[in-house]
Amino acid sequence: MATKIGIIGKGNVGSALQRGLTRAGHEVRAVGKEPGAARQTAAWAEVIFLAVPFGSLDDTLRELGEAVQGKVLVDTTNALTPDMRLALGFTTSGAEELQKKAPRSKVVKAFNTVFAQLMDKGQVKGERLSLLIAGDDAAARERVLGFGRELGFDPIDAGPLQNARWLETLGYLNIQLGYVQKLGPDIGFRVVR
Image (tube, rainbow, N blue to C red; front, side, top):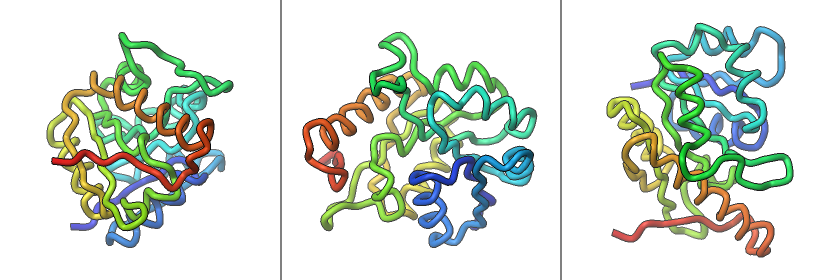
């Protein structure tokens, strides 16, 4: 069944998710920095993907306002500082902080452990990638697991939102391997089970 999906952010992540979710048959609207467009898109959408830099989350939430209440809010961000270090430690995560700021939303952490250019197909070099998904609302987690399957991933329920702490550190490791260790962005993680 087609879902109305709003993507806030039209960069590499937002564009890849828009391509993949549209191809999967969903009705997708993506917006960038157009004033008022984000709030309109969020009000229209059933599920909202946040594909903005971590440092922009507070401003984005202010702009979205009441439009996020009661909706699944998919946090694709990596909690990194401008100098590419982890912004938060082991006692919380960017996703948990987002849930505190949007308490009537159903925050789900997903897609942050995958490079943007792989998000629309869920695989690299012929191998399905694992898509780790964490959130406190089981129905919201299941919905995002379904999106992952539709995009071609092997989606894995990573449990409660508290586990976003480890997904964010895994996302950081992925970035380090790809760019600092120079393995490139055509890499990804797979849980063999």
